[in-house]
Length: 343
Ligand SMILES: C=CC1=C(C)c2cc3[nH]c(cc4nc(cc5[nH]c(cc1n2)c(C)c5CCC(=O)O)C(CCC(=O)O)=C4C)c(C)c3C=C
Ligand SMILES: [Fe+2]
Ligand SMILES: [Fe+2]
Image 1: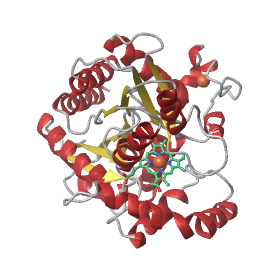
Image 2: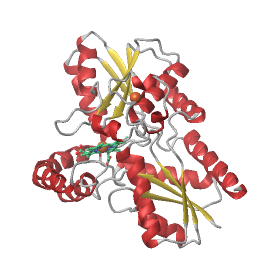
Image 3: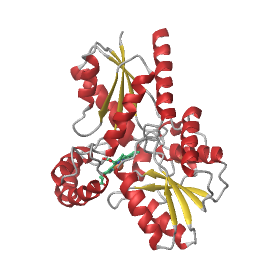
Image 4: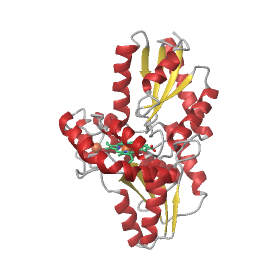
């Protein structure tokens, strides 16, 4: 069999125009694993309410962070792909779950090069039904309907792999430049609380309040909150952060249902009001900088911190196309290839 690699990230609109943002958000939010309510209710909510107002506001936010070469998330993912390609002898393609760079095109690109065994790498450290699961389900549907002769294997969530934690911690260390901060905040993309319950394979473990997340359970293989808290714990340990000098929060909530808490915006506000003057913020749910890190955190978050009396607000870039990160992906790919050959 000929092996090939498919890196998959979330995606971005084709341009920051309200029309392109509307098209992209329409596809993204109509995914039943993102807005997980019955189809008719989802249609009414997404087409009838969200897409009437949000594209304009989102387009304005995208305009603030857009690069000459395109969406930061896509440009960075392509840079990463090119570096990973240098680490391995197998063809490496890039696709996005939403938008024009479809997973179908990505698989086709590999198949056109003779590949019939694909190693799919969802570019998400933590598992969530709105990220990893939706990619895997779509890839399997595509395999069955369009590529019945290929095999697809995938990299599971890698949040607690020691080599990943070490690459992430080293990158954070380099960016924090040995300065001390009053507080280091680990901010992860949020998800609605009900997604945690839905992904609980035991159906009884997850309690939302976080108490469950420190009690060993097989539910943790699919518990986004546990996996976020573990990244914080492991990185804080490697950075030697003291208890109380760091915490975890969740950003980017949408709608009125409860999402994972504490919320990042309220946490930044509270820290400032409590007298924190200099803080650093790390965003380990994202491997590439994107709208949520460059605008929501680096611009909105910073403004909020200053409004409540904060002075220095340091945002740590995501791993992006860091050399150690591309080398690590290369080593995971080579390990997979060795093991799949033996099998
Ligand atoms: C860990 C990664 C992500 C999870 C989990 C996730 C869940 C999720 N997101 C929305 C709604 C929106 N997300 C938006 C942007 C966005 N989300 C992620 C990652 C995760 N989302 C990224 C990387 C981005 C940025 C994309 C880019 O082009 O840079 C947006 C669009 C922007 C906006 O209007 O705010 C929405 C909407 C939901 C409902 C959800 C549910 C679990
Ligand atoms: Fe999102
Ligand atoms: Fe838990």
